[in-house]
Length: 248
Image (cartoon, rainbow, N blue to C red; front, side, top):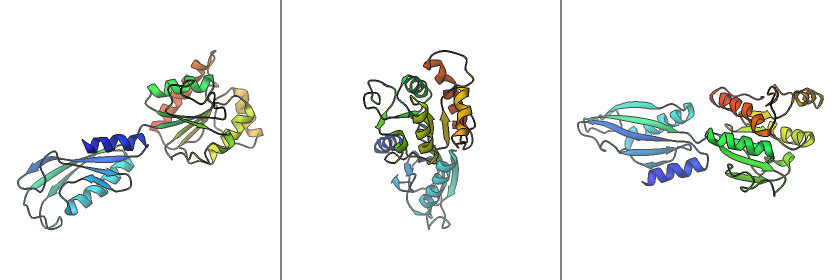
């Protein structure tokens, strides 16, 4: 039970891990079927598969599984080759990567930010909302977000650094705030940065000296912030499964 509590804790912190399980034993072995070992993203472990070079190889394979996001199955023969384990049996280890929910950071706690947060939560995102107004950046206003940061947009990521796999959407209440937020976002290593707005806003960006591929919501002919948030969500889902990309 402690391993699963640790998995919950790691996911809550946005960290990755891998769970290695002995799924088959043939003959004598230091651990039985069902034995588990959790390998955290920093290489530390909880639990054991019996020690020796088997665990060393499983840790290495687990870190690769975390990196690639793909499970692995590894067979072991318990001979002198594996750290002097001469049990004579065979063991099959299944490694399952545990990847945290994708992280969406919304800059702007207005109507669009609220609608986008609602759509993103149903799509499986962890959501952080950043705004310079405490009366807006709170759970009462945006109940679907988990984390709130109250700060100026130009300093949004000074005290709240984001991970490389984060997604950032800018939907502030004005062009000047958008520009401050965009400059701050471009200084991060987030895999995706999008700006909510109209075609006119897209045309204005080069004049500000910033290159942006597109604007979220610019092709949607509909009224209301709820509808404006829909294409942003769709593009995030595409980017989430694709390669690292900056733009909309």
